[in-house]
Image (cartoon, rainbow, N blue to C red):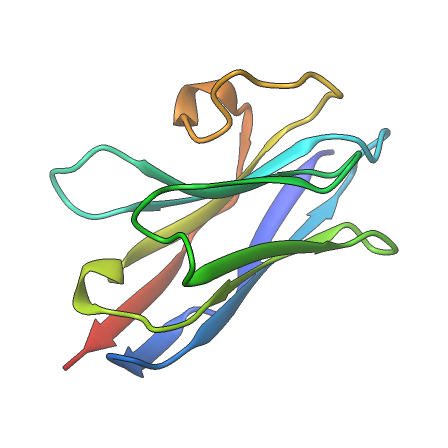
Length: 127
């Protein structure tokens, strides 16, 4: 059974860093797209970063470029989101999600492209 589990959320002061992990299991093919999304109440789920595991092609939202880095550990299909220079606007529930095929999505930061989701992990940035 395909499954994603997030780790690493927590509380941090503005300017600090956190690293989120997304462990993927139950897959049959290792080539897929893994994305990180975040959501706050009354707002649409926002795509933050994504990675195509076949060739490490990465995508970032403008709001996090230069601050967040998405990467993968090929050996165990874990995807990381390193978040630096965090600010108050980064406070949200963060989800990882997967497109479980080798399909190159034309919109890898749009939630509608993804068919599997983790349970989410809270990130809180305080002043």
